[in-house]
Length: 348
Ligand SMILES: C[S@@+](CC[C@H](N)C(=O)[O-])C[C@H]1O[C@@H](n2cnc3c(N)ncnc32)[C@H](O)[C@@H]1O
Image 1 (cartoon, rainbow, N blue to C red):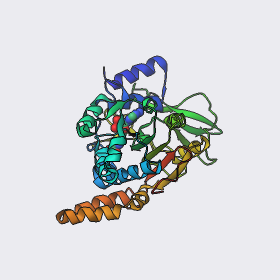
Image 2 (tube, rainbow, N blue to C red):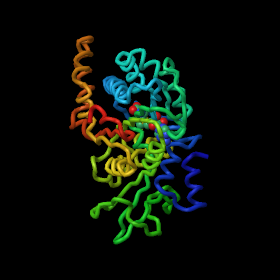
Image 3 (tube, rainbow, N blue to C red):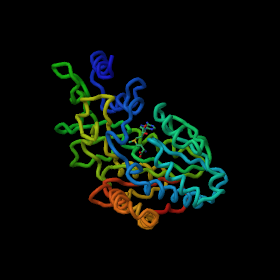
Image 4 (cartoon, rainbow, N blue to C red):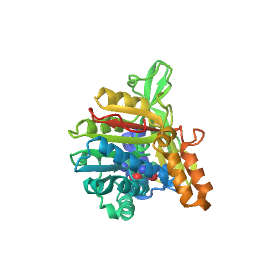
């Protein structure tokens, strides 16, 4: 029985399901979930570290800088959530080892947060020299000072979606149409407007996973920095942003369950607001292009072109794609959450 058949069976027996349940099953079902069984990085979509090595390299320099800002602890947990093919961390470590030398190399212990066994195999092969440990959730990362990075992870966190229906709010659910296929609808129950909803909003998405990340971070007793890069509006809440991608094309989110990526825009305003309320130090959100420029993208690009003049145009175009506001430079944002008491992070 396919995942689609199982979803239909689930709805027939238990009634319509929230969008968040649909996302969770489509992305993480162990038998047929997209990330659990057939992640399509490079096929269905492309990410910043896959576009240019400069992305991961600058993050590597940033990690060493922030380790020093913590007082260069003799042991530091370097954590990446959702490492994909391991490209970001491979590029980051290459420069971090140069910038941080033996002291950083000896202090650093790499932990990858990745629930999918197939993805772990890819990451283990790419990052074998760093001997990574694997865990499935942030909560499992051992205690101690921590430097965390996550690129395009937040947008995978399942979202509940609420629609304004006259004077009230109802949750968007997935049920069955007359032909027995998957279809969007609204739940019968009325809801209160989600926290922070603007008076003019008609659709609001809420990723509970953001709250869980904050709960995990707040519970850590040792100093940490956590850098998240993802897409979404600067402070307005996203409306209906649920999208699906297959072979580089946008497809209907209900058409290929488990066979296409599902993603939503991240509500950076809500994430920053809740992090501040929880007592964390918040830097950003800031546009990705501005972060990369302030971390030295131009200087690194110049170095790479000097070493490979024949590749100058391709090198320039790939870095431009990450930085130009008309391309990915503004749509993608970075936010850094830190434990209280640390100096402001570089780049913000
Ligand atoms: C869009 S890919 C980004 C991969 C990589 N960070 C990059 O930039 O190329 C999303 C990644 O998040 C991982 N992921 C999705 N949901 C996750 C979860 N709940 N916990 C940990 N990783 C998750 C996926 O397995 C995948 O590695």
